[in-house]
Amino acid sequence: MYAIGEYLVHPGQGVCRVEDVTEGPRAVYQLLPVGKRHPVHISFPVANEARLRPVLSRSEAEDIIERYPAIEVEQFQARNNALEEEHYRNEMRQGSCLDSVRIVKTFRARIADLSARNKKPPVAYERILKEASERSCAELAVALDCTPEDVVVLFQRRLGEDGQN
Image (cartoon, rainbow, N blue to C red; front, side, top):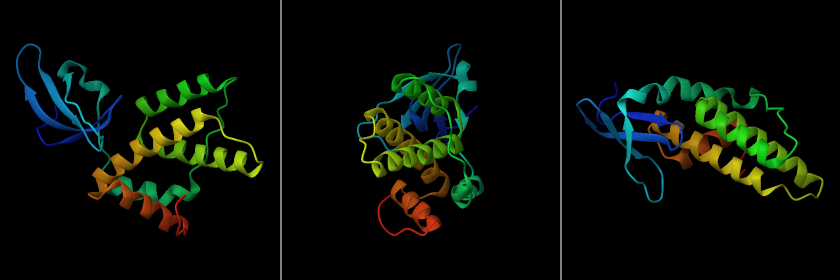
């Protein structure tokens, strides 16, 4: 059972802080999503706690950033963008932070490849990239006790980049 003040990962909302835990036959976590513009409290049944997962440890977060250049991009391709988007959204909901980071790297590469060939990337690619980036940066920021912007800078330093990428 999670305690008040702990951070955890909700499958749909990403990183949340436990604000309260109500006891009783229908015990409920009161969760507040982290890093959202207009966060709304979420009631989540303690009975479904198996769907939640703890936030990464500091060492796990540092390891992901350190290994980023070696992380392989995903090769999954569906016959249309909607099926591809559904696949990757499910992977973000059910997977780990490393999965979200891998998805970010995959879609950065796909978008860069299409742009290099003077083709406009599908809007779905931008949506997937944005969601995966927000989820992974939020979790890494909580694990490293910094801001999501600091996490982006850590990735850029790891890749030896100065500008936005």
